[in-house]
Length: 283
Image 1 (cartoon, one colour):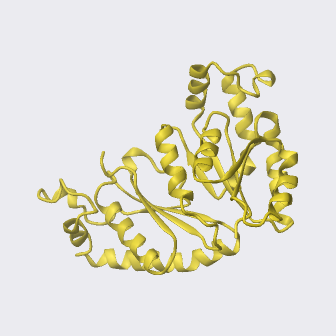
Image 2 (cartoon, one colour):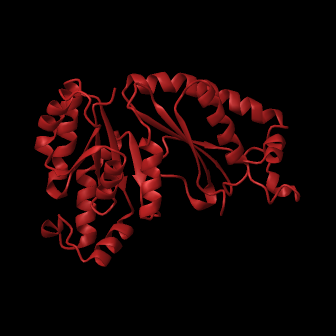
Image 3 (tube, rainbow, N blue to C red):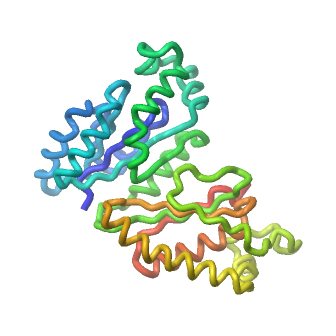
């Protein structure tokens, strides 16, 4: 059972928006909580029966340096935490601050916004590295981010299992930065070169049949299933609440989509909470 969710990340990357979305889903959210108060609030929450799930939005400015220490202290004391880290590219964060006319919380200790962003990135490096979920908002608008949070938390009861997100993508559009595992499907025969199949996507039965008409596909899927059989219990034992598995092909429309659909169905049949995203299928 997850005791609380901690929303951390870069200033300007969308932490407050995630908190607002969780509030809309019925969560009790404390925004801009000083890091030294995290253990006290978490301890109080553990004694509240039938209370709404709790999310803490933490790590503003210089306070970011304390987040990793406080979270580790909580875990050592037996508190189960799911950490969500919001990130974005430095140029994106600089642009957002320029558009908002707001002052970056670390600007006083740096000569420029760029420097302040990089200073904060360094302070939060340990938190980012240990996060259960990484959401890169560089190319997301408010509606995209809200949909991502709904995918992760709508109907989530915090049960003791690892939730899997299966993603398809195209390498020519970039690798998803939030993926825990990236598997390359470009070695599979490409339906794109079959004229009548080109307009279809991996969600169509014709594409799925074509991809699985080659023995190498079934061998690949079997190996991936064996890998997940090994990893899912290990991740759960380590307290990792969310696992993102990304399948990539050249454009993210045919092979990766077909494989992602099959693996998601397999996971659901085994009772694993699973969501599917096809990032580039409509490009």
